[in-house]
Image (cartoon, rainbow, N blue to C red; front, side, top):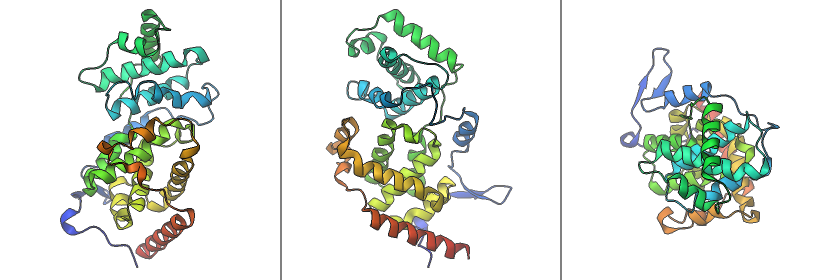
Length: 285
């Protein structure tokens, strides 16, 4: 039988469009339109060094108390820039720092100054170099830096589902782990957020909320299952990773120590996904 929806009292407010497709009132349609507008990023781009993306997050994430939005936007800026420009290895740290500088100016009420970013780069770059890189990034992206990020969609889904802060934080941890991997660069921000949130629901034994997430995100749960499997593998293999920044961050009590929640066993996850697929088929029938 189909999985039950959340109780009527906690059901997100929804409305119907003229095309009779049911759409949540807080659906983020503008963000999805921006996803269509943004240039598509290929995971096979020859213009970017594959193994250096994770270094950008370690660069400033633990140094400044900046928002999640700044982190996600900085990584997006780097990805979009490297789709157009070849960056030498010795300039990657400069690129990452400058991307954070731009993102901080866009997102933060009181962003760090140029000298702060030069300091955390051990002063190996000059002020003029960072300002030149800033101009290069902005001109390459044609000053279009209002890029949809997964963090915005995570927050939207959590609000629609009235999810607890711990569930939202777990989904943020899962999603933030992907910032270190190029395997997820081709995923839309809205879909990556939906997949991360769905895995968080399964890990918290809240799978009965999956139909509501499907309703709010616009993605069928069956379409998210390959991504959910991939994300679960990412969490499972994380202890082998050399970079511990994200894991250490979410091990703190401020973030509900969500890293202590174990990823799902492969067979257990397969059972959950198969059950949900059967329930979806029955609902369509």
